Image (tube, rainbow, N blue to C red; front, side, top):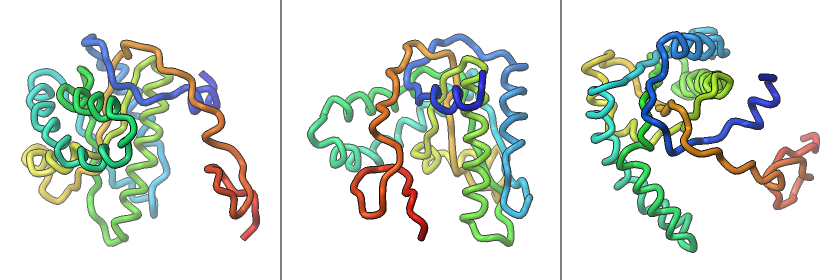
Length: 199
């Protein structure tokens, strides 16, 4: 799969088949994640892959994070209530994903923003690699607020849970992205996209 095809073809998936993901596939994807650039070349990321019974227990805890984001969803999608209901259903089981991956960062002397961007770059690599392997993923941050304390028992009290993602074989093929939502725009334009103006 060519890089441009992977970038344009990747979608956030919210319904997964229960089929397990082979260990060798997980290993390949995680290796690609840590080839990401990192602030000051510190590479201070840490990934925790959870499957099986522990994953099922974590899904139960993560579902509680829906209560936190529900007010925001209701405001953003005030004219589309079905979206809010779909989100609630998704959070109840996290789409049935067979794999949960949590990304942490180890605090350093650099600003926290440096570590956040470092982990975000690794997550993007991870998502694209998973897509290249034929897997669906969904990048989430909401569950982390509930799981950080529990994760500290498994990982380290110094590490910070920042991102999480779901992996698995997607149940449905997502719709193509609306091409009108991106592109070039001029300074002062209300259109979303990339400005070609020189500042």
